Length: 307
Image 1 (cartoon, rainbow, N blue to C red):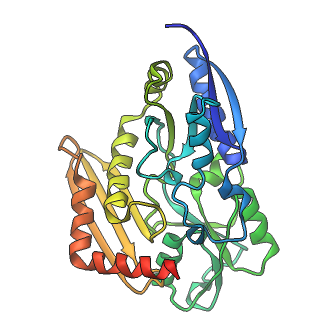
Image 2 (cartoon, one colour):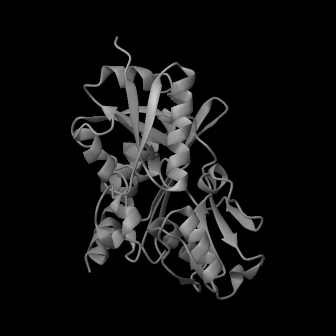
Image 3 (cartoon, rainbow, N blue to C red):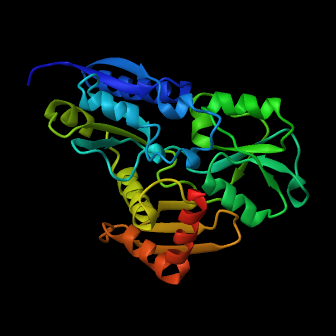
C-alpha cells in the first residue's frame, strides 16, 4: 500500500494538542508519516453560554467532522467523552487508546472540610452539577466554560470555593494543582479519561494504521458506557454518569441518571464475568433505569432544557 502522510485533525487547545501529539508519536514509532492540523471548534469560541443551552450535540467534534468529510484532514483525535454516540455517516471509530484515570477532581483554594457549609462550586457540566447538588444541596453552582487552562484561570479570578475537572485532563498537561480532592463518589462521564481516533470509513490505510493503537479493555469499557448513554438520551446534555471497570476476572458497571437539581437519583450497578458477552450490557442497564422512573425523569429534563 502506498505510503502517505496522515493528517491529524485536532482542536487547538493545549489538551487537545497534547492528545494529537500523543497519537502522532505512536504512529511515528510504527513508521507512519504524520502532520498535525489544528482547528478551532464552536465550543471553544462561544464561552459565555452554558454547553447545554447551545443545544448542539458534538459541539467540540463538529468542525473536525466537516474537515474530515471535506478531505482537509485524514483522522481526528478527541477526548472520547466529547464525541456523540452516533458518528456522522462515513466516519468510524478507528482506535481507542489506553485509558487514563477516570475520576473527577475538585480543585479548591487550599480549604478542607468546607463542604458541610455554604459554598460556590463551578462544576462545568450538568452531570457534575447534579451529582454535587445531590450531595451538597445547600451549595451554589456557577457555570464554568472554556478549555482546561481557561477554567483554571477563572477559578483563580473568582471567589469560588472550587471547580471540578477531569483529573486526567489536568495530569496530561501538567497543571494538576497541589490543592485538589479526587471525587471518588462522583460517577464520571461515559468514556472519561479515554481518547478516541476517528477516520473515514473508506480510508483503509488510516484504519489499518490506527488499529495498531487500539486498547481492547478500554474499547470494551467505553462501548458499555456509551451504549448506556445513547439508550438513555442519545446525546450528551442530561446528567448521566457511567463507568465500566475490569476488576479481576469481572467487569463492573455503574451508571446514574439524576434530575438537574440533583434531588432525584437513579443508580444501577451490575457485574458480569470478563469473558461474558458485554455487547448489550449498556442497553440492559439503561432499560432498567428507564423502567424504574428514568423515562419520566428524562422527559422532565428535556422539558427543562427547552426553557
